[in-house]
Length: 428
Ligand code: ATP
Image 1 (tube, rainbow, N blue to C red):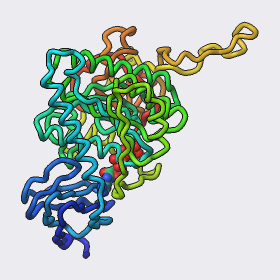
Image 2: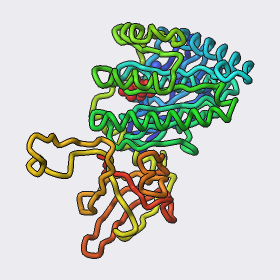
Image 3: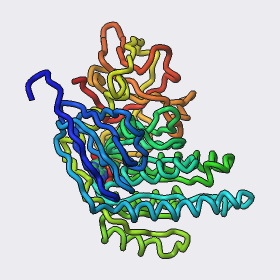
Image 4: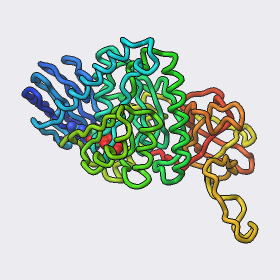
């Protein structure tokens, strides 16, 4: 098309139980709407006739149970219709979960029986874990439940920034464009996008999160009955597998959904056979799941950070502030020992305490780092505290001892305690 002209429109007719798979163009957004029939995007019903605008690079599917016609701009990277999908098996899982929620609700007086299903979704990278989690949550929310979404995937992060584990109640079907609302997530900062950097810390934070949720559930029959959907990392070998078992145990999962890998499924069945109250269910991976290479993942992480400060469509105005070095206390967790091996007694091994709180010297190396703002009031609370949000360091003035940073809004930070990991961002 000529520069400046708007792309041509087209109509796509979908037969029942088929889906339209779309990858939005890299450079331009996509406008489309539901013209007739009914259809849903990852579990959330499309509004009739309203135009929806999808940002560049987004990958998604429009599924219809009974048939639909879509009107859309004809400028996607790819779009095609598929009539083979695993959606029936997914909605069957949803029906079983519904039954368990109803039973939990009816047994409100019994501590054990009043707990709704705790579903954990596992599988290799690009097996559709986040997508299945999202569908199960949206279908449940549509029926009036408020399930808790737990995201343990520090690589991508669908609730908050990468490098974090987080949980949030889902009170409405998830918006197909905006994603999960960021209003009240409970977030713990790990600081890196792979757990190998400090697996002990990952375990400790998972436990911390699980305990808080347990406490919230004990005082809230409604969210207790609705249960949880837990999304996990695509890292499933060695340490990754150990961390999956740890998560199943820590969050007391009752349903393990294994996407697209027979070996993982049989390993988990074997490992969990002593636990009769845990069901391990194998599910087919959707042919629509798009594989994302490491470059795409890195750019998705960047995009996520930009979105945190500027909003999905540049609708937020972050605020730049200046603080004195002495106003802030920056820490990282874990890491090598302070004393070099040569300074230790003969025979002693330098031990790296994974949970040690290490003060960070402020220097120019901090420029471009994204730091988490702790809710801790005292230094000894930092390890067990969740975080309020993030700031991005834009400048460090050594002679004047000043730090310039970007925050989502003006005003004082909720705490002077900041956490540093390896999360960086460069504005593009
Ligand atoms: P990872 O563990 O690597 O984070 P994942 O297993 O959670 O990945 P998803 O994020 O669910 O995988 O899916 C990968 C991509 O494929 C996403 O961009 C998602 O929107 C897209 N996708 C999933 N299912 C479909 C489908 N049926 N049609 C088109 N795109 C899809």
